Image (cartoon, rainbow, N blue to C red; front, side, top):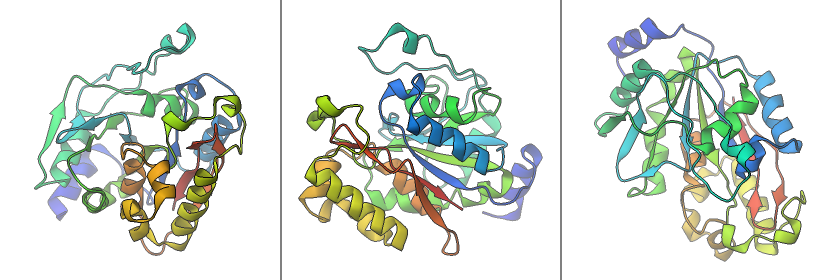
Length: 275
């Protein structure tokens, strides 16, 4: 990024101290309207960090062929699920978008082609957590999609190009789950905090150790780490948002965990704060 690029961002967002980076284990869409320890954790973390000028969210639920960024003035609230109560479908998160930030993001990621999108909006990976962090919906939000044709190392490296946005008060949030296997949910313990199958317990322990030790290459190469992670990450969609966050961490920055629990046997709500 050159000085001209930084100057363009300066036109839209004031210079700040480097913003933290968050990965949020979003879990069930019902967390959007329920009161539990996890949503309390979301609210608490928002009190620990400066209020951002804008937010970029990388959600597990925008998994695309190619890379896109939402560029509309008013993104719609997408209810991308079914079988839940009407109360959840009634939720709206009327945050503004930021066409300016979308354009800057696309330019920062060059030579990767990032197409501006005017149809998507905010999916539940974004709004189900943001409504707890910033319930007034008074901060502009854009989403950056995840290109499913690319390997984890690509996403780790791509994220680094967004680093300078942190100095402009941009909060970058990854939203997914580290352990996420919906086919193996223990429905008897769907609301039991701490309930996990043996492989899920092993996955949580080892990924937590790698995170805290800064051994990110093992997480990037998660498919090589054994059967416990094959069960924990049967598809990459919920795992890759975390990889973006790790790509943004600088060596001197602290990484801490919160909401660090298994639930329903095969889900972890483990969330990460960097900086």
